[in-house]
Length: 82
Image (cartoon, rainbow, N blue to C red; front, side, top):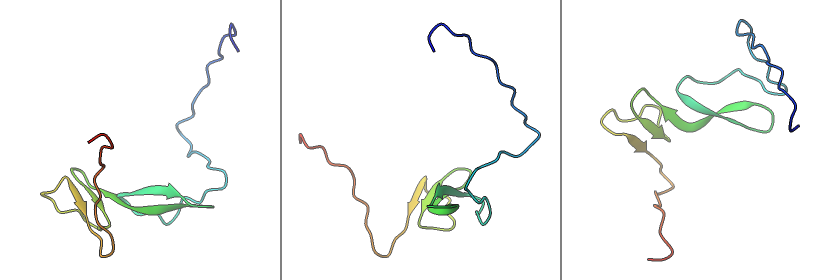
């Protein structure tokens, strides 16, 4: 509320955070997690130390972004005024 002072909260960094309703198992290092209906799951986005891959298990080292699909293509944004 306006005019009320905020009471500082202490963050206990010694304990793991509690995520109500989410299961934090089965995630793979490097993949960006996403929330499904009841759990966190691996997305198709993989991040290494210097590059990102979508649809790949290990991005090509010489590429900033590595996209791989057997059924879809890349569609770049088009401007409506051009």
